[in-house]
Image: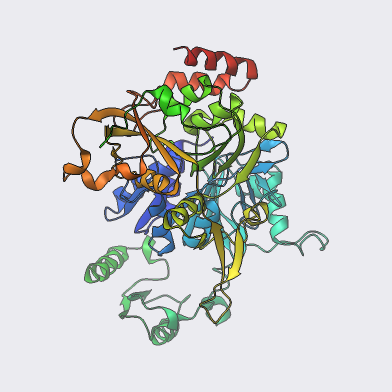
Length: 287
Length: 269
């Protein structure tokens, strides 16, 4: 099993940027993660069930749930006796095993935007094709296990990283039948192909620079946006940056900057100090 | 005003066999001393409703054979492990289990305190809890033009609420502080029985700092002094949990014989 501190740091990444994070019953590693996220970003509000020190609520047990229904709770961690490829969680029963019960999952899964599933045990009995009881219907954002991190995209889990000492092949392939079943369950048409074919996460490849069309609509971006390119960058030519700049018509602020004598790999070149300075200056202006 | 002080034995004697008994979560005020007394008095056929979860208290009552039914969002011993007597009763099919989710129980008690038959609640749609709970209904939001399904959960009106507080007075006022779910439970329940860590010499409602966190005597039937009344559970930040007792229990409860042995030891302690 990985170091619990590593898991807490990984979970803290999964809730980065949250204004409010709540942690439910008996969840020491998520609790550590929430406090780490708060250390990184001190304005973050953290509620840990059962703690009097980390409890911002004064109106009883219901207040957290009302707070979530008001749209004020950004992140929550959920575990599960079983988790399936569709993101459903089972906290009630499986075969001859009784789990404790659904707790707040049935409700919070639907009302909290950033649901992070966490279960240290990464095994076929936990990661199943279909849960035997749906405590909470699947709309999670992330799944972190003792072996890997998955993102939940368009109704399925996508492996984004394997923990140190694990290989991605080991997780999706041989050793972890449950995960393979979960992948199969998420892509019902795969088994009909000979050999089995799976879609893999290719979001980056689908992006504009390769296909000439954006996978997203830049016109919907409203945040202040900084575009930086290197003067000698042939992979993303100036016309592409200028086109993107033009499409960012709803950004509150848009800036296009060119760093002289730099290529696409500026971060490894002497121009990197200028790159960092540009980014820092841009962020400083947003404060 | 007459005194509502009573002994622990008299207080527990108020709970009839078959009562719908509301008990709080481990993070609130669990009346463990009264729970041992319930077992000593040999109550039968209790229907527990947890507000909204439970741990050792429910497991002990179930293991000792007092419970016919439990409605809960979760029963476990937290860091000490699973609630083994609860699991055994489930496996044996010897008890009715009504699975719920935390906010549905909170809302059920709130409906009762408002005197309305149900409350609507967001979320839950898509959960198998809806088929497990035919008493929860899904309706179209009657105020919306477009499709907007919403869950209705029925009011929960316990016969008795039983919990422990830091401070109570002889009039029946009980200081709950930020643990307002205890006040909601009392509002929702026909009778409320309170054990207290300490008895306040005056009237809690006359102290302007304590009054806002006080459940008034209107809702409280009996108050019994029970120092360290949540043992072996902890109590808020004042009393830590008894780790060795809870670890021993979690292990012992895996077998009916060893459960009976530790229960016997605790009942006569």
